[in-house]
Image 1: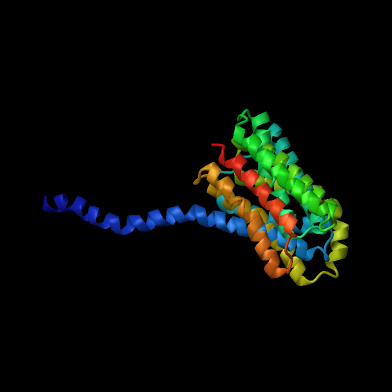
Image 2: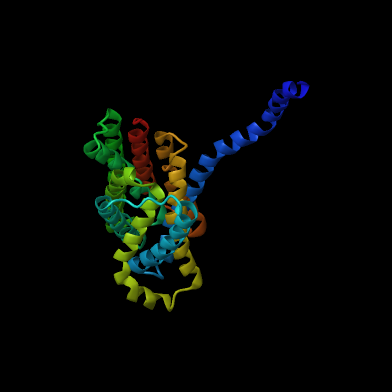
Length: 313
């Protein structure tokens, strides 16, 4: 009887010893995943710029996606081998389209922009995409058109106009800005397609299947890739493969993990750190800094994205 009466007391005295560690670890897991993803995504802009003299846009995309498919396949085997839920034919078709747009078209266009723009400016322009996603969600998913979205779009477009002025006076490439805007638009369409099929399966499986579809779409660059690999430094090949493993596979997996543990608005705001980190990385690693007008315009654009996102639930 004495032992039974004392047992709850013993558990009560042990609980505070272990619970704070578990709670702290749980609280830090999502921020750690977000921080890692931001660094990985920012590094991809810098690596694209760094290997631009070595690889053409198509071959760089193929190397990145082959590495990404390999890493995602390992993740699927480790995490989904017993719970893998393949989507139906219609959803599979949408995922294939999402993969071709996101992993193939977006990557190739972004690589083209990397031949013409510094990493920081490229990242700032591409990060207009969340506003486009929000607008598309209001149009296709009936999420509404809050005033904050219109205000954010107006501010973001003003920022793009300032960046275009920098291109107009020859300080940065106008074609590079246009390509980055095209990449942002393709990104937005792909993300809306991904969202449409999320109820059919889990995010990891969607990203894996999409990456497979994107890899198949860039296989026509295989011959050119093989030719460029003959003279490519090992560091450049490693950098291209790192983007596939880091930014593509781990980045999307960690971001999906954070989505289940953080409010959407707060998580969306975290993505605005990517251009800032890209600018710092580019300055340190490549010695490249955006022009003053590009920084002003890019900052204005990101403020507009923040207004549009933080005003939504």
